[in-house]
Every structure is written in C-alpha cells, then in structure tokens.
Image 1 (tube, rainbow, N blue to C red):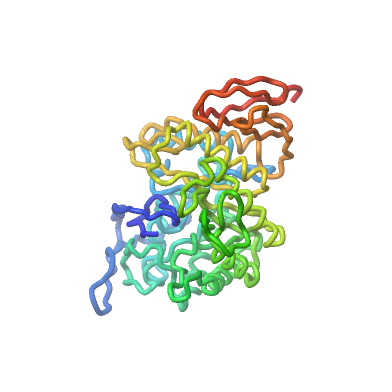
Image 2: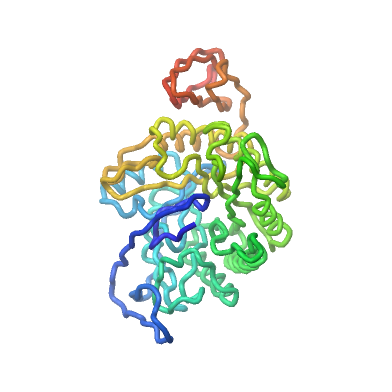
Length: 455
C-alpha cells in the first residue's frame, strides 16, 4: 500500500493506491522544534502547542445490546464541517447510536506526540468530542506512530512514512503513548492495536513479521490494562487477502482462496498474545487476481467463511471487521448497486455471527462526489448507506435471534428477525418475490425493509 500524505482517507491495502495532498496543521501558540541531528531533516516542522487539558466528552448512552454496526472516521468527517452540517451529521449518527472509531494519527488526526513527552491532541480531541456529541460507543485505533519512534526527525512529521511501525526499541514508547491516550479519554473502553500490520511485511522471508507485531501488541495490551482492567483490547487487525487461483490454503470456497500467510500470522498471534478481548481483521470480497468472484454478490460469502474460521481458531473470541470492502476504488457503480452489495455484505456478517463490522466512511470535501458516503459533504444531506447502517443497528444488534425466512425468488436476498426483515434485489432488473407470505415488487438493486405480521 502506498502511504497517504497526511491524515488521509483510507486506501485499502489490497489495492495499488494513489493519494497525495497535505493536511495543513493549524499553527497555534507554541514553539517550533527543529531537529539538531545530522543530515537533512525529514518531514515538516511541527508546532508544539501548550499542554492541553483533557476535553469534556459526553458519556456513551446505555446501549443494552452491543450495536454490532459502526463507522470509522476518515480524513474528512462531521467535526470539520460548518456548524449546521456538523449538527446534521451528528443527529444522523445519533438517531440510532452505533460504534464509531478513530485513529490516533492520520485519517483526521495529527501527530499526537511530535516530541517525546510533548503532545498535540487537538485534532483527536475534536474527533472524540464529535463521537460523544453523536452518541457513539467510541473506539480508538492505536495507529500510527510519531516519527521519533521510527527513526524520523524529532519535532517533525513526515506523512510519507505514516505506515512505518515504531522501531523495536521504541515499542515501550508506543505502549506508553497508548496508555496516555487511554487515560485522556476515559469514555473510550475499546482499542484496536495498529492497522493492517502496516510496516510488518518481511520481504526477505516473504511473509508477515507476526513475531514483531505480537511483541508490540503485548506491550500495548499490558499498558492499557494497567490504566483500566475493564478496557477491551483487540488485534491483530490484519488484512485477509484472497485470490481466485490461489493454492495451499486451509481456507477457500467458491469465492476464492485466502492467502495462507495471512492465516499463519493470525494463528501466531493467537498462540502468543498475552490476552485479547476480541479478534479483529479486515478485508475485501474481491480477489487480487480476478476481482469479484464468482460475481459481486457471490464473492461476499468470503466474509462469512472468514468469520467462522476466526471464531473457531480463536476459541470463540468476538470477531471484529475493522474495515470491509466490496468494490475497488473509483468503481463505476450506481449508488443503488453499491448500496445493495454492501447491504448483502452486512447480511453475511450477521448470519456468520460477526460481533462488530465497521464501515469505512469515505467522506470527502464539500462539493466533491462522495460515493458510499453517509451524508453529502457540505450539506449534511443523508445518503443511502446511512439508512442501511441505522436499520441494521436498530434491528440486528449482536445476539438478536435470526428467523430463517426464504425468498421465493433466489435473486432477492433476505435477513430477518422476529419483528422486521430486510430484502435486497441483487439484479439490475425489477424483481418480484414472496417473503413471509407477502408479495413484493422491487426495483433494480432495491433495498427494502418490512415489518413482520403480528410483530
């Protein structure tokens, strides 16, 4: 994956990505710390603000059942919009409160510790406050690392090295930063460690360096539990990649063959982790060599198969999908087709028993097209995926008993519980079907909700 330049929106690890653009740092009162080391300083000099008090953050609501569904904030989100748009986006997210996730560096947050012991939490504070304002069950992803922890220039931030992990001799420093974050935001009790094994690929051995990652994870796990034993920690947050024509894998199906090296890294972490409250991965339904296989909707069975494998191998740990994707970037899809495929993906997560599935919200600047977004940038107007997420969060939280309804037309997929069901036309033509004794006529790629008789 090519690094993003600044706190950029997510570019999936399974794609050759492009991405540039610099997020300007707001220059507040402070001093510019320049490197005194030898050689040309790397990155931009960072303005170190005065110490900032921890922000006041609203407590999460009483959820009852775990929401299961949620979003990850990226470079552009509701916190940086005009006040009326911020308010609209906040209400949209809060109408059925869900899980919300934010990284500590990148994807909307600046370098949290540009110099050892000197912190800049301004952007992260704003995001955490926005999550509180929108009634989130908050999650923080502990990625990425300040430059001085990974051989960079002290007092500077080089966004081109965002994906580099801390040096081994700085693992303790990163764990200390994680603990500092946990103490600063006591309303956050769920943490994911690192992101997609970034920087942990060993080219010499042609496999993941699961040993180094697990060492980092264990130090972070210990540090967080020392802050609060009730904090929930998960890893390894590794991408699960598949091919149509792969071989030598213990996990495969009509949707493709998982790269065994990804599974080996997961199993090493399971055997050697100090502890974990959940297991987390990410991935795409598409294969690397053939795209969606056998088709857009058939490829989604990968999510269910991987979830089942993770539960079995981990001894029943709750399974989190930190990111999930069903189309390549810039896919020439209508919003109806995109929403239909994403809705069926969520059906796969629900039926396979995934505990959490976080939607990577690809918000953009005001005025830009925003396929797959939750609200229209610059206006806050609701877009289709917001309704899908709200509906699934209300009707299909973790643990809700599912009812095995069938559709008379196999092209129409259905997911049901006692009081409600959702159906999706998986074709680009109108479809008629009978479900639960009622006949329905659906437009191409239509997603529709229906109450059940007697509920």
